[in-house]
Amino acid sequence: MSELDTKAEALIDDMKPTSPSAAPGQNFLPPETRRDIPGQYGSTPVWRAGNGPATLFVHGWDDTHRIWRRFAQDFLQYTRPVLMMDLPAHGASKADICTPETAGISVADVCTAEGPFDTIIAHSFGCDAAVRAIAAGADADYLVLIAPALLEWADYQRLKGHDDATITRAGELLAERGGVIARTDYRAALTDYKGAILLIGSEADESSPLELIRQLAADLPTAKLVEDDALSHRDLALDPRILSEITAFLGY
Image (cartoon, rainbow, N blue to C red; front, side, top):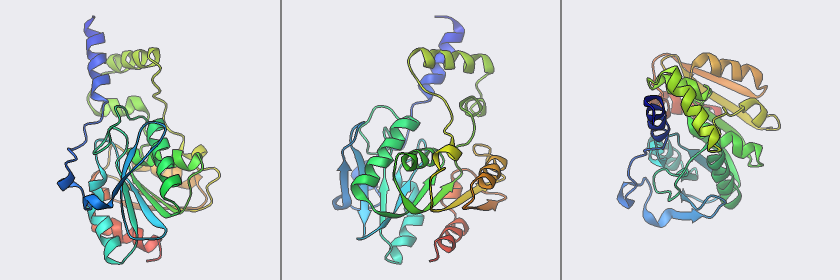
């Protein structure tokens, strides 16, 4: 194997999610709130608290449902039902792979089994999954997309420090194996969505450039945009001010 192929294989291996461990005691809600939703790519673990139309929380890459502990706790304090899930190959999921396609189908499976949902709140790669699920027929009155994954695949690899030759070769190897690395088209996925949309981004977030989020907001007639100056990519899903913006958007 050439040095370039070795580096390309290492890049591909690095693409596998490495979310934190999911021992039962580490989950946000107690074990009795969990169930597993069967689907095309295996079962999806979910945790529900409260009855009636809920808010569905969808985490991002290399994360688990536990990132939502602050936001979900606030919802629960005001007796608003919540449902959290682990995407394929993340957290408590037993799946071996996670792609935009498998993640989107997983969210769609959850929406079919556990709906109706009042709101879907997603972060980062979870936004890909959420909009793909909506394009497949999932629905909610409100959609909140925090730091959506709008960069091209190659751009994300450059942010990780990979050089262009390695990225190009990795793309070729993935294509030979039937891998799909195309960016999710948010505009197309949300063409028929009739609900209200909130987009959230930060000037300090290189992974989800604010300018791209602004462009997306301008293209979506029902979208509102919230901007921040200093929060990092992950902190956008943890910050109290962002939570306040979301609850105000939802009319709480």
